[in-house]
Amino acid sequence: GAVVSQHPSWVICKSGTSVKIECRSLDFQATTMFWYRQFPKQSLMLMATSNEGSKATYEQGVEKDKFLINHASLTLSTLTVTSAHPEDSSFYICSARPGQGHEKLFFGSGTQLSVL
Amino acid sequence: GENVEQHPSTLSVQEGDSAVIKCTYSDSASNYFPWYKQELGKGPQLIIDIRSNVGEKKDQRIAVTLNKTAKHFSLHITETQPEDSAVYFCAASPGFQKLVFGTGTRLLVSP
Image (cartoon, rainbow over all chains, first blue to last red; front, side):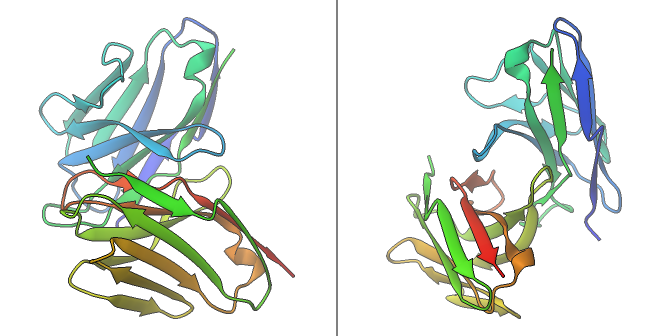
């Protein structure tokens, strides 16, 4: 159980375009999902907390207009990188807890974004 | 806020040896400490976790110890195998809040 599915696994786009990444909890409902960003050989940095039915909470320094998060259902959260630029190239990973009261956090397989 | 330090950054061992990775945290309110294994190009995989009311937890070749007084926790892998080679991250969390990750340890197990 506790499977988090993330798509696409990799995407290449041109500078100035927008890219959407999907994160689904397959066998549980997630009122909260988390989006992380990871640069090569570095740790995971939390970008934002996605809350079902309400606005996302962004970490300090993360542009909310740049990284749009939508959590429209209990099993789906999306991250849209708007007007992508080469510096947005990174590994993006979502995660979720299998329900209220659970501490364990499970991660998706990640999305490698390359902006040309 | 919470700050997690992790050592060493790289660790090379021979197959069959033990490997130990150590982390320290700063926030005494943290009470949940998971460890993740990340292979290249993949998302982190939860391998073991411990709560602050427990001093040690073991799962086959993997064990985690926690010293709440010193704010230290460690991952122990015994009888290492080449497939244990990966990057390992520790993390700390004050309950159900966000996880703060360590900087990662690249483990290489040579046959």
